[in-house]
Image 1 (cartoon, rainbow, N blue to C red):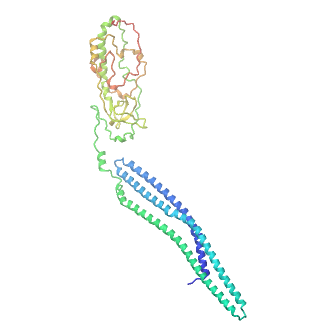
Image 2 (image 1 turned 180 degrees about the vertical axis):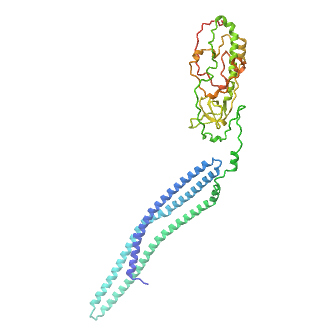
Image 3 (image 1 turned 90 degrees about the horizontal axis):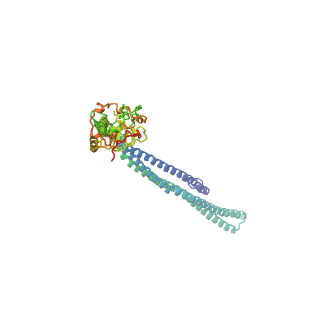
Length: 491
């Protein structure tokens, strides 16, 4: 079906107008939306990577647990796999930006100018040809009006010339409009083909991305699900470790404290029992060497004769007291592991090899309460972190021989005989009741036999070994006394 020339011209003009007024503005809008799409996907990929980084971090924490280690590894693998998928998605949208957004933006700006110039050129040429044809037709009409009623042959020849000119111009006009319409339709089609081709390529890349993601995930999902198929089962190896019979803690004969069943790594997380309420009382050590009667003043005449017996009495008394305190040795332990209290004020911090004096003899749920000799800090600590401690007291056979032979040149005095009235005014030493409640001496002090471990030189009692280097009389201050005794021999 052939179209009229005017219809062809209208189709051509509508095609150009459609490209300029609909297609190119649509491309501009498409570029804007594409940039927003790209930003959104980039933000989504970044958020996805952050999310799966957190999943991997949780998996790392789970690998510490003996029962959840495999699940932690699964979480780490899931996080890494999804991060690879997100990276592939980012690469696809970088290609989308490079091959579609930039190309559309550049083509749109160029095409607006090109289509405006092409349409204007078509309209100009069409107008010129249309005017030429109309002018020839007007001239033919004038010639025919002029030749009416006349039989001159010259009008016939001229009329034939006009008819040939009009026919030629009509043919040229039809050819021009057909060619112009064809060109306009092809311009429109080329633009739509360009848009379709670009998005076909983008679809191909997206399809490749999804296939790769499918390959990454499809072979692993079943294995991941298998690891979490039974959430109520504890592995046999862990159950064997949990149900293993406890190993008794080394202690003094006759005592059977509970064994610490907790893992050493979780020792700090366990909540210890509250610190004991210590009732203030005077320690037996404060008046350990106190005597009921005031020591007599030794006269100048009696000093020389009583010097030997005084040394023997002091030696016997000191040895008896030291032997009575030997029961306190079992109250001290040596640490075999370091322990940090952290932010818990009720726990005790110490290093490996520290000596701790036990303030409570009984173990409570795997915890002991004591005081570090070096720092004097008190608190709870795990019983599995220490072993019973026995100290070999230093002996001095030379001092014993001097005391027994009476070869001392100056009078010998024990701490119990020096400034006793002033001693009673000092602040008492406070210790918890459990320390010595079960250690009442089974024999009188005076009847004990002196031993080398409790004997000291110069008549001064050596610090009992059970205090582990700490002086129990550090708070007792000795004040000088005035005497008129001049019985010392002149050298």
